[in-house]
Length: 191
Image (cartoon, rainbow, N blue to C red):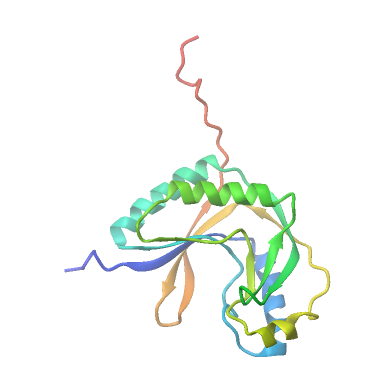
């Protein structure tokens, strides 16, 4: 008999197109060539919305919630053009430009509001990690590695990733498209 109360770790993420994933991999490779292995080295580009624990039945419920939210959210082109190197957060991350921030903040807020569980950890503001858990010396080494960055992609896909406990890496198990269907409150009204 399968124990349905075994909970696995999942994350819901904005998942960019392969071209953007490849561009971020190049940035990660440059960092690796300078400082060696680091946390998030092998993680594919994404924007974390939330992380949560769920058993197989709870996961089915959350998938339905994600589908419902995706039906209402519209896709939009977003641009990441700022590289943040922070000794405080021990990270090197890409941040969205000023015109992309409001859209991404609303998108993340809508998912976080729509998917609530006592086993949920909210993500931070929208960012794409290059390296995490870096020492101050590693951040200093990374400071002059990159020139201007201007990475744009169509924000149209949400993915569920499951933590592979052996590899200690998240793997995409499902993808959903943002459909942007308008809510029509007058659809059922009489003329």
